[in-house]
Image (cartoon, rainbow, N blue to C red; front, side, top):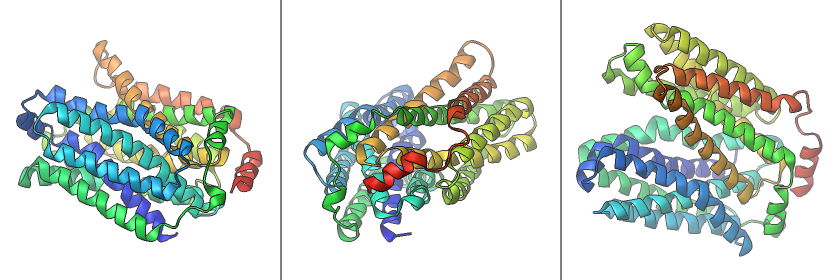
Length: 392
């Protein structure tokens, strides 16, 4: 695998660490900014809003100006570093909110351009495997990045955690400038070509499956802490290591799936959703047993987020994997994340108990499986692979 693929993985790790870390330092930020914890939680939502809406708009602008991917990524990382510096220096909630919105905008576009550079740097048969390395940065952010920034917050203060991400973004800029080659004229994607991909029904079907996969996972994951402490009976002090085990399972599953995502994309997605729905249902039934809860937590970690390389490989096969296609995919994933967490909480709000998000996750996983039925049994590439080969 080319070195630049790992550099892109480091880039995604840096940006994802910034996205997640507010959740680990809410008390510090609430005290520093003089705001209730609920208002600090909105900073996470503002980042997500920037990713969902701003990312595609910025990418459209880059395509209209025909900015090559490398130069675009450097500019976006520069914007990210500036916005993150503003957040690190913020002494008011308003400034922090604007900074988080801007980092979300730059982050989504960086994510899309990074995947586009990844796709143009390797041959089509190994794009899923390369994407798994890049997406591995997202997994490591939850396992390593978030705990590290939380520890830094506790020892050195929250500003130090924000400045760490600034340093990482600048480091990524230097590495991208030195090691990522300039895009060849033949692969500089035009706006018309990118927009043309959105006329493909199969692309929207793939986006829908991606949203359902992520919704199923986060409908349950968003309430794991409450379920593990209140229902399973784990002490609150054990939650960090339980979530750490879950994160490690994500990383392991991501690595395994990444090796086979290109050859067995649809079977991996179908099998993953079957296993995810079974694991979530068993978790709901046996949540009162600690040992069973721990085992099922690991299983969900192995088969849930690890489907990411397959959903990305599917989109890259259907349409030319340019920055807009990937950025919109990132937005769809974030919509699925937010929708899953919201839908998962509806059952609790309706009085059906803490286990209802697990059953919501089961239902969403089954819907995701149903969305794949028209495509089961198709060849891994088919006509779309031919299209991609011609495009490259």
